[in-house]
Length: 577
Image 1: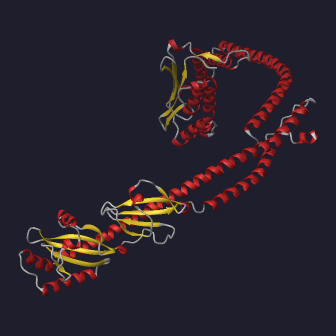
Image 2: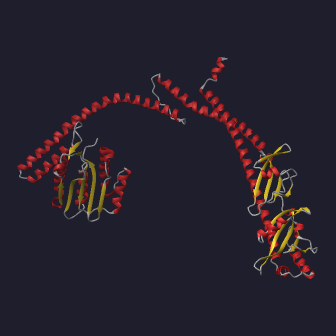
Image 3: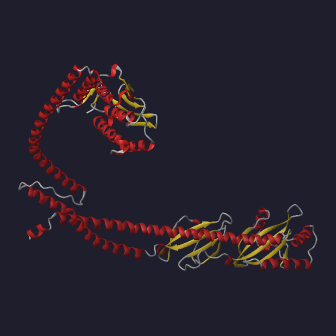
């Protein structure tokens, strides 16, 4: 039994079990939160949609109310109606023919107005002109509504339910004489169908819609219960027939009418069961997929460890082999890289022990050659010098001396320093120019400028001479007339000096200049301009090697055709590495 359990005690099995355990917890939490979030979102969206329906219904009621308002304006502003009421205002009797004419006008407007059941006209004395029965206005409606109509000064006033027919509602409007300073000439009473104002959502049979006027009286509704507590209260939900309903209210700023919508809460979260089932099925499918992926992932994670273990076991046999890099997590990759570096460094140290002995033998041989060969060369040049002086060839003798000094400066033993003072460097440049004068004669002129206070500054050997050589070879060599080479050192500030090499030779065109500058930026060399770029690039690499990031500026090269070339760079006063 323990043997069987030990099989599952491997790293891969533990990773698989932990991954699955975490995944089940994550799926459960995510599913639970998602279900709650979706339920809340569905309910919120349904609430917003219902509120929007209420707003639209209130807008439709306002529009229908405005149509009634316009129809009443057509009646009270009609010229013939104004004329008849004007005569009545002045105390004249309204004839039967005048009433018939008014009836014709009112009927014509009523036919073209939706929702209007009847229109009644009264004069200032509250006597009814239409219909033809001479009843008083105060007997039709209460006196308070007549007073409100007077206070409204011609605006439409909503009265409410018609005492004679609960299926109708009444509105009243005072008629003002436009030719008599808008004096009160009578009243217009209109009876409106309650069904003229539709339900908020007639298609939803599970929803209750209620329309209340500005007096909180019911105009239209498909709800049979009491609405007083709903209209007056602030509750957002009520319970009807053992079912919860959400209450949505919208009051019009124009008419003061209130639209009430009662929506079942169950309808708001309709479809949540399907979402719940979908989440459960997705969770089961996710666990299956995650099981397969976890198995593969645990295999991928543990395989590099197994390979590394096998490689390290072979090291016990004396073989320090490296383990090939494999795609793995960063920690395992770092562990593998660390072992490989350890193996490589160990192998490298072993090789160094053998290589050190070989290098020591080669160094001793080179040191012996470096002592013999220059010694032979110097003796030969000295013998040549004395021979020339005996023949009174003083100029050639001086050239041989310069050449000897040139070789002594260039050839250095391994244990000698690679740094020289500016004074020694300028002496070497002068020796080179003396030797070059043997070839170019009077065509070569030079001007060396080194302030005395800068003579002690140490610079790498042979960093100025290649630029001077370029100036001689490409400047003097390509010019028929005299060419002057100028080398100067300037103090830029306390920490840096500038090295400037100039010639007034033929110069370079833009293409060659760009090629050399490009080779400096890319770190390569160029063969353009007769190999000039190669020497410049090599010197620039040496400057970067010695001074690293202490170089203030890149190598500056300026050249114009038939005007010459100028090369400058700035280096620290203190020596580099």
